[in-house]
Length: 408
Image (cartoon, rainbow, N blue to C red; front, top):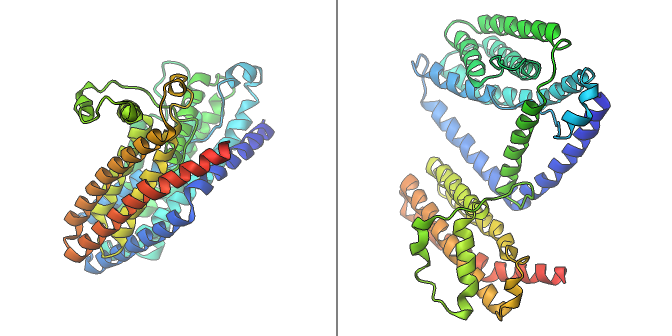
């Protein structure tokens, strides 16, 4: 069974590597470096204004560490067919699940250590902690994450009707108790408490896993939800076949289409507009990227970094709209109606221009509110106008023409 998990893990890593190459392209990495550099500079400036003994400092550390402790779930990689074909090998599945937990530890524990490393200057300045105390808290955080993953594994063997050991309330309560004891009392106490908890869960699992069945349906559902979250993240940057959208009527938005004349040359403009509003895949993508960009711009200040971030999100939105051009290629009536290809392209370019203009306007508005610098606002406005024009009027037609040529 360990071999089965290794095979699935290799397949999973190949799939993740394929999408990561599309996400972390040169443009995105360049903008990300500027963004992280700006955050680091802002963090450094904030630390210079802090003093020791602030009452809210432990509260901030508690919230951050508690949230970080919940990052990283048990990656079992189980599939829907496993409940049928692997049911006769259920006892041997324990080795599979243990291997899954061991793999899940890697990324999860790296996240905990990175968070403690970033938070350590804050702990040194605001709480006047020593290096030994910070290291002890890091040990407690690592053991805490180990306990939470062990709770995920143990819950797979719980009988129906029992309260799940990995219920969100239990995991959050345990994290808050352990971290709070380390921040307000001593980090060594946190290490002791979480070590007792980890050993207790390990003993329970050792005593029960051989006598109880695996909750197949629950584990498959949890894994599907975990992978869906990953695919939705990738879907922010590239098209992911595993993420399917739904259709909603949205009658309250009918007023948006009153400006579209019922003419033959505007057939696709009406079709694209209706599809964008009623569908959840592309419209949700545009809304999510716009909101994320607005939130980042609100908290990021400077002269050039906000401009680069705004340009990045406009590019991402425009790039993600390109697959929508082929949305109705499989509908036979779009090939029967006497509609010129030029009308279709013109309608799509018009829709992309409108969407990018609205998104750019919202991003620019937040940028102005957050920075309040006339020079930055002026440069950002010029950059956004030029980028919207280039993406909609130049890049989109060229990219679609190239895709159509390769398709032929």
